[in-house]
Length: 180
Image 1 (cartoon, rainbow, N blue to C red):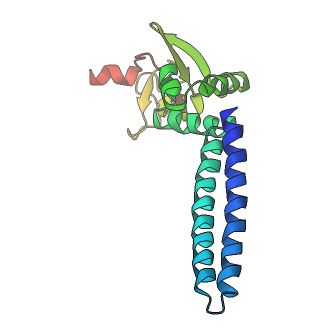
Image 2: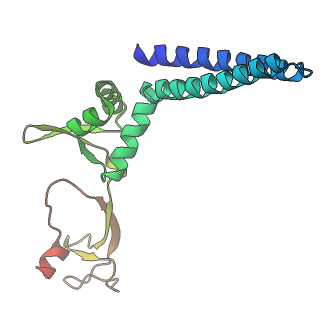
C-alpha cells in the first residue's frame, strides 16, 4: 500500500513540478523588464525544479519497494553470498515484503528453503560455485583438474570431467583426502 501511495504521490509531484517550471519559464520570457514577473518566474521555476526532484525521489522509492525490485535485490544478495542466505538477512534488508518474494522464488524453483539449526536458510543453486574435477567412472575416484592426467592412476580407466555445486555440508572428495 505504501508503495502505491509513493508512486502516485511521486508522479503527481513530477507533473506539478513540470507545470510550475513551464509556467515560471513563461513568466521569465514575458517579463519584458518587469521585475515582479522576473521574481515570480524565478520562484515558479525553482519551485518546479524542487517539486520534480522530490517527485522523482518519491517515485523511485515506491518502485524500489515493488515486489519485482525486491525479488531482484534478493537475487543480487544471494549471488553475493554464494547462493546461500538466512531468511533474517533478507527480512532485515528488505522488510516484510521479502517473505512474499522468497515464497515466489521457492515456488518457481529458483530457491530452496532449508533449516540450519533454528534458522531458515534459502539456497539458490544457480549462484553456488561449481567444483570441477576429473572422475573415473570405473572405480569412482576423483582427481583435481590441474593434474595433467587422462587415465585413472588406480585402475587405468579414462577420466571424465564432472562439475559439482558447492554445498553447505563439508563433503570431502577423494582428492581432498590426499592433501590431508
